Amino acid sequence: MKTSIIQEKSYLFSLRIINAYRQIIERQKEYTLSRQLLKSGTSIGANVEEALGGQSRKDFFMKLTIAYKEARETSYWLRLMRDTKFISDEASSSLLSDCEELIRIITAIQKTIRKTGN
Image 1 (tube, rainbow, N blue to C red):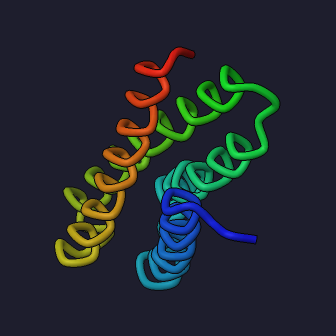
Image 2: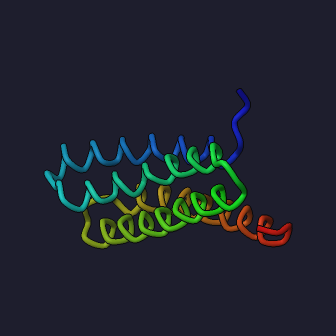
């Protein structure tokens, strides 16, 4: 089964988020914010998978929209955790870069769908 770029990148991002979550709870003993990050960060890939299994273009678009919103939320939690020093500037920079890339890819897919008719 061939995977799409967004499918692959969102899955790899989920793995990075899980690892970051583990480090935060082990090193910082922070459970509330890190749990929010874990939920939104892994939800991106889950919603991409749901979109790919969508029953219609509209279903695909709506699930992709949810993935976009989850990516925006993840960006928020990453910035918040960086600014409160729960994660390092280096780690947050790398994760934020990947998250922004996901946002750009999802946005491009959504624009293409809009152009070709929802």
